[in-house]
Image (tube, rainbow, N blue to C red):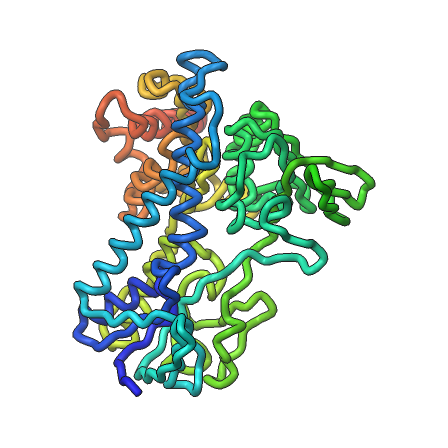
Length: 467
């Protein structure tokens, strides 16, 4: 039996940061994970491969250049799965090396295999050869992540009927596809396959999609996706999926039948906790496999923490990293500030979406007055240079104290651009800072100044009427 100050189960973003933070504070730390999963779900089937696939799609299809070179422009006429996965394999391989190197440099012991609780301080690690070893930890961090949820009524075969994991290893790009679920993952893949030329139908039982985003941004995205021949079936439920030699037939409860070459389910995520024997540590998970934690990421057993997707919302790699660091600091009695409420959300559709703060709908529901300032990429020199005529930036500004209440961006570089708004909001700045600031020209960052002037001009009009 080997003793450690901290045992971390899972080497994804949350587990990595927890282990390294504790190691830098001088603690003996061990990480447990399967040898083929170092870096976690995020690195192997989630964030990194899907975003790398997106970059490959954008590059090979030439989609973002068509405003400049014509709608028929393509860098490669016949795009194969091999073209798409070559870049993904390269990036994932490099990132695995980075994670291993970081753990080694910080003297974190890496135990290959799967872990399960023996009691609340002991974890049994079973290596790939079936040998078992017991490890004890003064503190334990659960960072096992999630897997795609699979309806029991659907027969997945990883070729015709897939989930968001197996779609990354498909044999060829389908000419037609049904995507069940219009959440973040479903819409990201819908936009990628539509860009590749697949005829995509999105089936969603709710009446809309991405309802936590700005309404104008979502409408702009739907317009762009429909332009790529995406069909939306909102308010529809899948009754059955039939597998046939030439593809699949998706039958909706309304009676509609959709024949396609492939079907991808994006029906939420399930916490990877069923193999942990949580009850032996005095813990339980909900029906989605998620573990409840307090503000310090402690579970019901105070010396056991849980971080990342396994605890549920917001289930983002970026927040998981901070949760891991916070949990490690708390376990090591190191002062740590709580994670800031202002967290940016990034959605890697084509074009991408990012926002921080509240939407117009949320502000209206809360009866908070605001003025909106908008900048459109087509009015910026940078937008014309890169060929993005549909992008936009929206600032929601309080007319009372002139602070930013929300920033919403749609278009090229949105997930990078949002951090300017995050910095201003986080430091308590006002829209006047953006009005007076000098931005590089030509850049997309200049959109902040344009939107800020738009908002302040609207506020000025109201003030003039009152004089």
